[in-house]
Image (cartoon, rainbow, N blue to C red; front, side, top):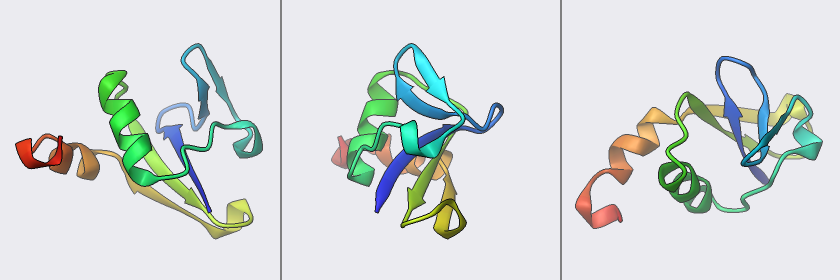
Length: 78
């Protein structure tokens, strides 16, 4: 499973701080959901969704990133 970040407006995947890509295969795989959430929080990235991709784009689940941001803002989650 791949754990990716995607910009909701542009539908592009995070590749690096200065590069986004339309191709999920070229995107940075965070591996763990917690890593992706922590990174986006520290980098102050907004307007994202978390993509959990199994083996193909047809098997991907997109989750609004705001649901993770709300939980992450709780002091016990830091």
